[in-house]
Amino acid sequence: MFTGIVEEQGRVVTVTRGQGGAQLAIEGGAHMTDLRVGQSIAVDGVCLTVVDCNATSFTADLSAETLERTTLGNLKPQSRVNLERPLKAGDPFGGHFVMGHVDGVGRIIRLECAGDSTQMWINFPAPLANHIAPKGSITVDGVSLTLCDVSKEAFSVCLIPHTLAITTLGRKGPGSFVNLEVDVLSRYLERLLGGQTTRAGKPLTGEFLHEQGFA
Image (cartoon, rainbow, N blue to C red; front, side, top):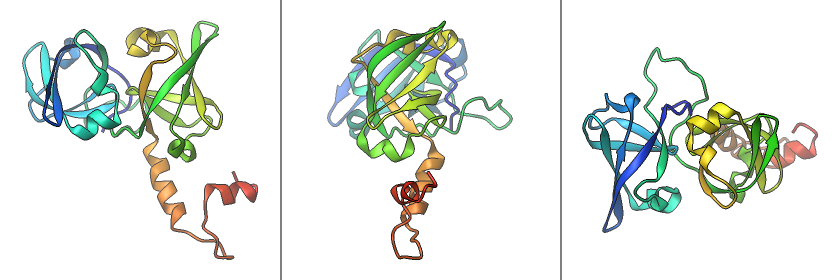
């Protein structure tokens, strides 16, 4: 489990493609010197397993599904990635519960100046609509963010100067693709609501609650 608080940026050293998958070698910094083989690590919000490591870099395998469902298949040598080690018992909890299981890929459509910060608008896949609400949480390329405005097909997040400097989001602009993970609590809530019915026998859905004035 992660929190979406990126510790540092890493640099892709090599991308080795094989039959049905690939392998990434990534150079890390001071926060990654204590990695162990078998440990999980979030790379641009994707939970991967360290299969080899030394004092300066680590290697992780990418399955065919990971290549298909995330942006990691687009990485090339010298690409920068967000890195976060898994949460340990007793660690400070600063973001929100992040599993490292990407729900879909979004596309940045525009950036707007908001004082010293930047408001980033991102298109999201239609199946994620029920999980995206203003003031809720979302993970973008492994960064825990608060949703600002939400439309039918896009949402915005506000990026403070620190986030722009510490994470790769400061390097991305319109047309860039990003990994999205919705709040894990919303997944369970959707499944719970999907199995409930009203007294009239209708499914208890977000649409029904909206019609009744509850959402």
